[in-house]
Image 1 (cartoon, helix red, strand yellow):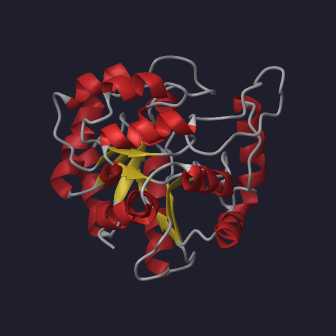
Image 2 (tube, rainbow, N blue to C red):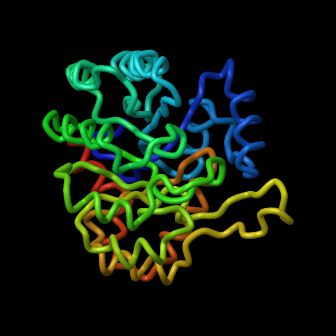
Length: 284
């Protein structure tokens, strides 16, 4: 990868080629949204080459406790072996994992930069004491914590709403916490009200860009955040705490980059969002 990547997609997902097609078929059926790549590492790198993305952060999600160590082993091997250039794998953690500190210390020692948690897929609210413990351990180890935030099309319920997160931020110290989706998929207006200006990191995954619904009658809205609201968000929150991200394969890297390019932000703000902030947070 380049020494100082100019464009970093801080939020992507890939699956091994042997299972990617089946996984995507299942997830498309659940979420009603068509994938923009084949969700393999090779497919993601083709997208990166097409749209000029230098580095993509891969975020594995453990939907059960048994997956945690397996996913972390895969991430450690991928990063240390240099088998997938241009991709930087994070670790995974589940709130029911019996000894999170031991596993988090293991992945930190192995060089992983952080972890992904997903309240909706893991069926645990973000303010649950088990998540708080994980975030506290990560803070002590200098690990980044990326959490899904807001509504999730495939898992109805309130798992990590902007109001819930705002209250949580009053009680925890986790300087490298990243709220995905600008603090809440499809809840950007509320996130702007209660989270913008809080100082927490946020990524733009499934916020900038557009979606490709399979059933246009059921999901007629292909757009994501309106550019005007995004501009206001940057002004209030500060460009220095916003990370460009897409949630590939569910969003087009090209469409997200195009919307960011069209936003009425300064060149310096766009440079920070595109990759400068990510390089600082990742220590690149």
